[in-house]
Structure formats: structure tokens, C-alpha cells
Length: 360
Ligand code: ASP
Ligand code: CP
Image: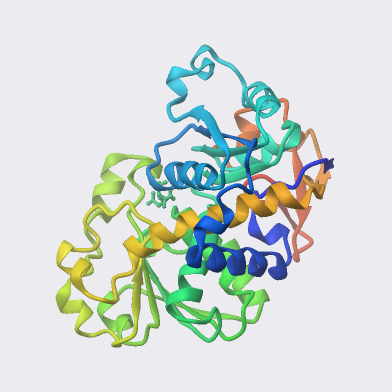
């Protein structure tokens, strides 16, 4: 299925050269933002946030305003006609007819892709459930490029809620496209990285290790990417409480780290990094959030400037087949075509909206 617009649902839909172009532009904007103050004069961006956000929403809004454009949108669907039962399709169809670019965050995996099928302007995925968060990844790549001066040859530790953390899913998919990156996944057995992400890493020739102990891993890392335990994605409060407070980065653990390791975190932080670490020159998370504005300015300029079309669904439509993920957008918005890709394994189909695998 082809769309007249260039959407950003998953960075993997684009060649690495496209991401590099955005990162290079992000660096230029950082060095001289005033140069770009009018490139989006007369343009309008809509932000539809069905889920809470501080950084993503406000950095997108800041980015558009700093480019000379204007913004509309909601940050609480309860105050919109979503509360009257309006479908995602109708909401995005209407709002995209008012705007030049639509940024959507939604609690359900696949929602941004679903929105892109019928939107009348480009759609940007600002986080779809526990699935992906590609614009956080652009922010993270820009941070690595500026602070580590490279996107290759890095040993990257990811710690915390790796099963539900959409930021680490998107970041792994991106970093394994650059040579010689190694991953050390630090989590409890219950919160390990999903199998499909590990398969992508292996398929691209990168390596990963899975361990339980942050103390054991930290000394080997160039980058430590901490994550919050995603309370809102757990089936029960008991399950969440069993995982809460397992990993806390503090001054003592920072003593074990390399002098030039950097600490990243998409934020918000709950208690997985103690405030004393904020004063360590290796703590990069607040800087990372600031770079998010430059990454998003570069993305908006690229999406609005390129005027390209994109493929929305590339798989095969099987309308009688149901995605096995009860939380997939196709199980919430029944009008959506059920589309599956064939995976490397001929006995498996992958849902094109949420990447859930299904045995056939
Ligand atoms: N803000 C990030 C996200 O929306 C990380 C988090 O919420 O923990 O995915
Ligand atoms: N990093 C990030 O997505 O933060 P918010 O959830 O506050 O937008």
C-alpha cells in the first residue's frame, strides 16, 4: 500500500544514509539555530498525544515554533472527541486535513502505522505503546555523534525494562546498522529484550550478551543507557512491584565505570539514577533531552522538504488472520487491513503493525 506522503513510523523503513542526513542537519542546527528560524514559515504541525509526555511533545512543539511554524493538537484525548468514541482513523483523517505534519503518540503498538494509512499529511511516530520510539532514537544518535564522536565500535549497555522499553527497541535496531557495536543487556530474566530485536541484531552481524548485574557490566561500557521500569505496561501492580528498584545507578557504581563512559536515559527518571549522579560530568541525560529539539527540527525539515511518497504496508493482507498480540492496534480498530510480513523462518509471519510473530 502506497501513501502520497513520507511518514516516519520506524527508522528501519529508511536507509541509514537518510538518518545520517538528519543527524548531520541536527548538528548544523545545534551550532546555529537562528539560521533555520523561517524554514517552516506558514506550516502547521498537529501533535496528537493519546499518552502522557513532557519531552517528546514539547520538543516537537519547540522545534516547529523555532522553525517558524505553528502548532495545534491535544495532550489528553479525554478532552477531545476520542472520549466520545471517535476512531483513530477518523481523528487522524480530520486533523491531518488541517495540518502539514502530524505527530502521534499512542499507548497501542502499531497505532502510528495505522494512522499513516489514511492520513492526508506525513505522520511521525512519537511512541506506539511498548513498540518503537524512532524520534527518541534520532535524539540518541545525535547525542552519541556529538558526545562520543562516533556511532560505531561502541559497547552499549542497556539496563532496566528492556521488554517494554520502546526507546531501547528502536535504538538497538538503529545501532546494529553501524559497524562493530556490541550490546550488553542488563535486566532481570522477566524483562529481557524481545526475541525479534535480538534476531535483528544477530542478522546484522552485531553481538549481544544478557546479564543480571549492572556492577559486573558497567566497567566494560562506552555508553550506559538506563531505562525506567514501565509501570503502565505491566499486567498487574504485583508484577511491577516485583521489578521496581532492581537497578539503581549511583555514585558507587559510577566509580566502576570508564572515565569517558556516558550515561544516557530517555527520561522521565523515577529512581533508577540517584540525583547525585546528575553532577557527574558523564551524566548526559539532560543534554540528550535538549538535543531532542535539534533532532526534531532536522526531522521536520526533512519530512516537509523531501515531498516523497512511502510504502505503508509491504506485507500480505490476510483479513481472516488475527494478530496474536491482544494489544496490537489491529485488535482495537477492526477496520484495519491485517497485514503480515514473512520472516526469515517460513513457519512464522510477523504482524506489520506491532512485529508480533505468529506460527503458521
Ligand atoms: N519517555 C520515554 C518513552 O516515552 C521513556 C519512558 O517513558 O520511560 O518511551
Ligand atoms: N523521552 C521521552 O519520550 O520523554 P516523554 O515521555 O516525556 O515524552
